[in-house]
Length: 63
Image 1 (cartoon, one colour):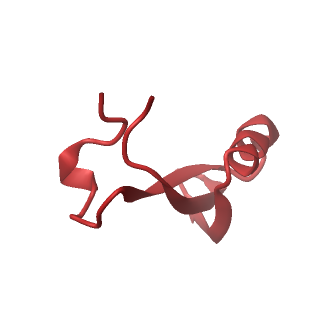
Image 2 (cartoon, rainbow, N blue to C red; image 1 turned 90 degrees about the vertical axis):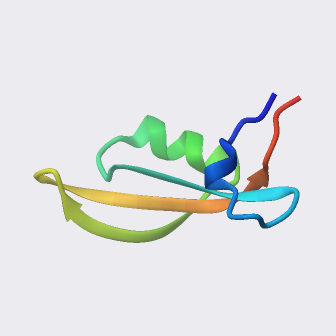
């Protein structure tokens, strides 16, 4: 079963870019993103709070 829908793979082979955004203050989510190998890419202000964007490469399919 695919972990990432085909439309998000961009035809880049067996790996897909994974992105996630969370408030800077959400420490549990930020620890999780670090634990799965995502890295901080950018900070910005959105939705009334400072946000951090994480990105990384990961397998395009699970299991």
